[in-house]
Image (cartoon, rainbow, N blue to C red; front, top):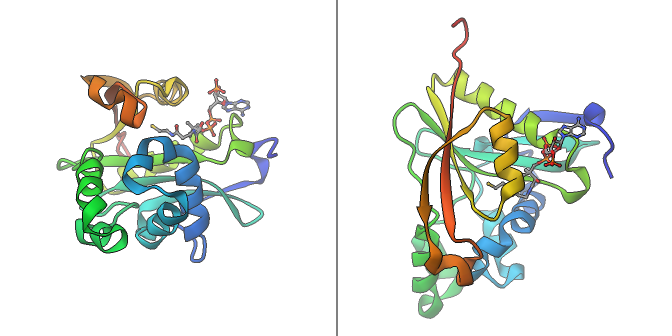
Length: 203
Ligand SMILES: CC(C)(COP(=O)(O)OP(=O)(O)OC[C@H]1O[C@@H](n2cnc3c(N)ncnc32)[C@H](O)[C@@H]1OP(=O)(O)O)[C@@H](O)C(=O)NCCC(=O)NCCS
């Protein structure tokens, strides 16, 4: 259990050797949503770990251990990856085609001047003390340094806690797409896009 953020270090980039731990945190946070595409977990976690772009994360560490991370897409590169060919190679053609189609539902493209968030996950034992907020502010600093005008993210309707956090950190909802056909399969029935303007340095 982490009691306060006093021992938390925020850094840019995923430390070398922390890929599996990062994938475990992602899976714990997003396994319900990604499960139908990447299950079983013993295959999914190494697959995620093997296709991370370490340069597209901000991380929270306590005594050198990863307790949270936020991924982002910028200039065409995202924290999480794995092409259709990678999926087919790992899972085979029979189920692979279906998996690729499901993963395509989660694909997002950043418009010019946008940083798109690629998931934020904090270890269950380190939640509610401000780690998620620190990660979001570091993401905002990255966006400002890259001259982005806004940060964009998607949040699903069942994740009220994350949405409340985003609203507290200055994000506003701009659009909600109803996806009732996904509720049974992926556990959510709507996706809301949120945006936060980036304050440029010196403005
Ligand atoms: C959403 C998530 C990233 C938030 O991370 P977090 O580290 O708990 O976020 P914060 O601590 O900054 O803020 C969350 C809560 O802590 C409270 N809080 C923030 N700083 C605090 C502090 N210093 N002391 C006590 N409480 C604090 C906030 O009021 C907030 O209240 P809540 O418990 O009602 O949510 C985390 O819950 C998570 O990993 N969830 C699973 C993955 C997920 O849903 N990701 C988002 C997908 S869109």
